[in-house]
Structure formats: structure tokens, C-alpha cells
Image 1 (cartoon, helix red, strand yellow):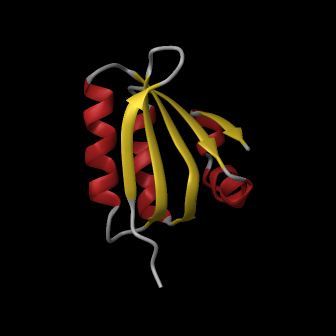
Image 2 (image 1 turned 60 degrees about the horizontal axis):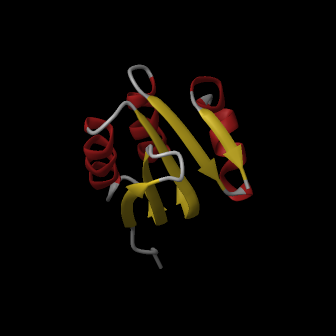
Image 3 (image 1 turned 180 degrees about the vertical axis):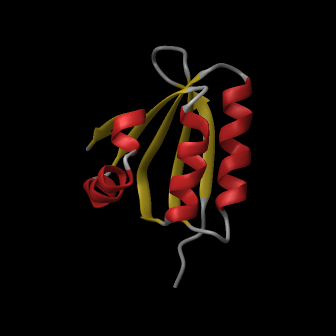
Length: 100
């Protein structure tokens, strides 16, 4: 059973934009995830994406993140569950990733 995607935008303690994500990110909702991330990036180039509530991240979700790293300062906070996917995909080389 798929866990619904929840997206909550806000500001961090440093004043930068944040996007807290929970549920599963896959090809069925990657466009929704990308649109939410784009809205936050439009407000400023630095966005922290909190993925600690994400239980599953497939290649469509990884592509959403990769597509935005070249022109934007993405900071990812990820659970240990996603650490390997982020490392193997190469996202740790192009975005600041903190594993919690």
C-alpha cells in the first residue's frame, strides 16, 4: 500500500525556504513534488528539503532533485533509509545532504 505524499512549505530558523516531505515519492507523484519544490525555489535559490518523513524514493523523485541542483542551492535532510539511494545516485556530490 502506497503512503500518500504530503508537502509542507515554510521557513527554517535561518529564514531560508523549507519543504518538508512525507510519504512516498515515485513516478505517480514526482510532478507534484517537483511543482512544490519549484514554488519554493522561485522564492529564493536556497531551499532545504526535509525528506525525513519519506519512506520510499524512486528514480523519478531522484530526477526531480537532480534537475534542480545545477541552478539552485538544495540542502537535503534525509533518513538513514534513503542514504544509500542518495549516495548511489550521486546526489551527495551535487547537493548538501545531512543524514539523520
